[in-house]
Image (cartoon, rainbow, N blue to C red; front, side, top):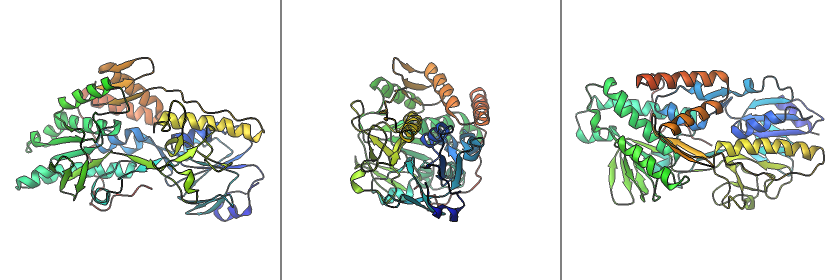
Length: 437
């Protein structure tokens, strides 16, 4: 069914329907796996040759895990799937009229196109934040953040200027969602258990950790009791919490807040929002104000019969989710599995079935033995919530090796109160952080 223009980028021409998947995240992987038994050609493209377990990026940034613990080669995942082809490339534009995806390696014709590009950091038009704050949406960005944290501590040993010292030892997390809360908790563990031993000449008590959020409480997507407990856990780490507060400006040294306060800091970590990674070429009417693609109950992009979107990119409005489903890994995974079944039905000219999300709950950890979990039938907090968080994240990691390496690292950290990966492998220079797309 596909045209000969695919020859130029060494993708075999085929008479079988070609399903092109853009993105090797949670949704893309589940979709491709479930298409294994279909008589189709599955082509996946991604700008990286690995899958990233994004919920644990903050642990790479705070020296808890190495990148190879949360990243897994895409080719290895599908090495036994004969109808699967992977190409490392960046998607540039969709041409629906010609049924072609334009990429950095050439054009790829498709019969069905599935956009699973996920989300990117949203700075809400604040250019100074984009230039100076640290995002955490990819492995390279997390490594940059880890280097910056450690470099600031090393520089703090060398300065005699009190204001410079304050800026080097002040870490601000913007955003009080799960990523922000977990990052602040990890920094609190570093301050309490690890840095005093690593830097005995440095008065670590002067280290300050702040969480800034424009909302009235932390973890606004979770229950009020989970929010309250998360705040209690963070205050045990002496984290200063600024609620109902926005950020106004940041020049790399001074962070201005909407309440008129300023913080001297050389490390602002941005966990305040994301937007869908929408590709050019689609109708403007198909994109929401939050830069997500409008899809129907079958994941079809509004206005197109053969273009689909799943995961963070997709805004599927339902009675239970009037603003679209939450940007969570379980949503993407379930949509990927469901779409694979519907594509099979479509090929066999069978009626499609609408997607229904099975809510498995939401959770966040704030250091050892401290976590909150809102499950469908019960709310769990404290030690039990922490062990539940550990178990679920280990089981969701891709690859047996990754599970074992992560498990060993966590056991070592739990028993020794240590994190053994405090390495500045690639020094960070401001202005050189990779831009996520």
